[in-house]
Length: 306
Image 1 (cartoon, rainbow, N blue to C red):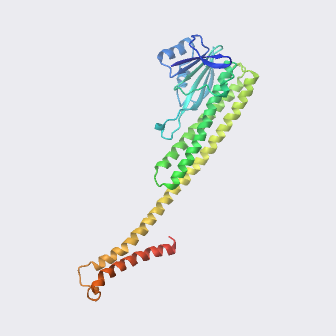
Image 2: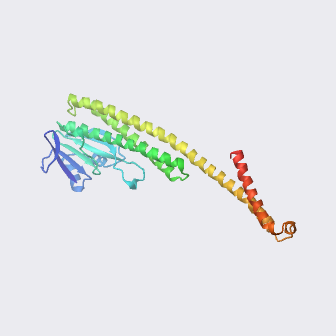
Image 3: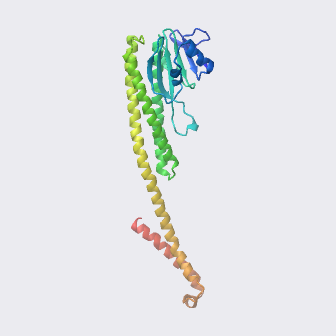
């Protein structure tokens, strides 16, 4: 799918013009890929990398354009089951054209940063900022989910919530790799600022992007370390909860064994002394003995504070 955009009055607007300077390709089909590779001269391998979630971020220079592969979080859905995935964004900067290639419709040009756009180069940097901001928002969600799972693990002995925490920890590892890869891309953009025709304001914005991405990486590192510690601690908590349950079941079992023994003794089909001495009170005597035997066990438990 193709969306054409243009900068009008310093804002992005949808357009149907064939000569639009900004093109957004969403999961391009064969016809669109042929146009991108043959007419625009984009390298087929680089174009494939724009849709590959496992591809690392990089910057490449071709004779008529610069190619940037940048990482961003993939849109989360319930079927992912607490696994947050990574997607790639391909950005191809020509002298008079800017082309975005994504695998799914998750690239948005919204917010205050897209209200004042002066050039294609500035739009490129703001699209990069949007990806970093998206990572930060996902990390906040990570923290909320981790706290909720921590509470559930403390109250449950099931492995389900613990496995979800393992999945979150795995997702954070991928996020850290992606954010580190983005940091290298930003550094390379700063190194080749003149080749990208960045203005002094663009270079200042690049410095802000460096700081923002570093803070995002530190946030992800902190959450990863905390979550790894929590997972190890919660494994011990689940094991301890199971031990406590087994101890309680053992106490209940012993408490029921003694009354059962009393009933078994007096239920034997042999002549017992109580048959001759207790008379009609024999039944109630056996009941009282059974109750006292069970109560003695629970009294011992409370005394010893098991």
